[in-house]
Length: 419
Image 1 (cartoon, rainbow, N blue to C red):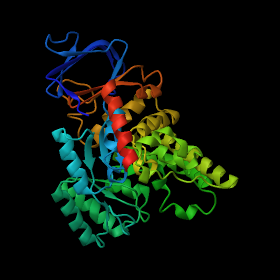
Image 2: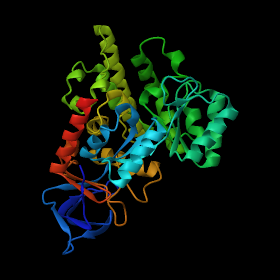
Image 3: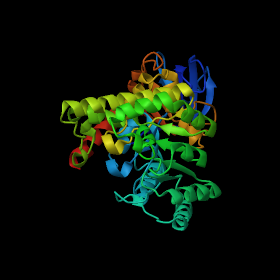
Image 4: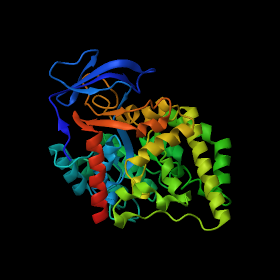
């Protein structure tokens, strides 16, 4: 499905919601030309294709900061666009495959989001085909130089990465000018990871996987509650001081505790071979502990937000397998954890652009920036679920109206049924 590529496009009489602003702007006309936002004012050029924005709301394109596209195949790409997700950060896939998709998207052969990627994950013990095990610190420095040479956007580490190699990596990455993201290794404390300069920490549970494990002799939920009450504020103050960003991926746990996850109608957009829904606990006590743990994770996210930790939205779609739709679930999770709808939108637009050093071109609706936009039929500041009510998506100036978005979903469903 090809979008309409127009020389000039004007969204007229729309309410503009800019996550960098404190209040919406009503009755605005946004003019897009040559893939960028050319004007924000009151008038449309005479030669522009008009999109009537009366009663509608315009937000920047959404970001998913934690995907694994090789796991979910290229059929996920149109589903992401249909959900207004215009940029993703791939956190571990086959680099050659991702780069091929990026080239095909750029040329218009494929419909899909802008993809930032880490390439293979660095780990101390490989457990999937998208990982590297460099070994000692010297080899780790060499791996970092190799990844920087091939042009990855970030370097990701996983939880089994050795302690001495971890600090060697952070030092080498700093010299190379490339950010390190990922899990906190099991032999490194969250404080040490923050002080060393790890830019983003992925998954709430990574705070408890390693050096806190000695405290986890009883119920995990009790240990997390103790951490929140006794230690969390001090740790989160350090995150704030060091500008450490957390991508909590709250929704990745929801499927584990949802007994109806296998009946989610959105699974029709997932390849048949990939429909692996986590099996819920079988005993009442296990389910109760899992629910209590998930509730504690949410309280940790609430506390991080209260303490001023920078949060971004990510779904870890390798786990849920459902692309696009789960980003809207995560926005709702953020609001349930105490963020306002505007703060949640900021975590899915402006903040990811800043964290990835792309805010000069992305993240807000401003003149000169790339025209990645989502037109909504209802106000997301009234109800965050209104981000799901998408009238149109604009990607680098290319317009996908509702009919085109529905066609993308049909295409994805057909692809999923064949794979």
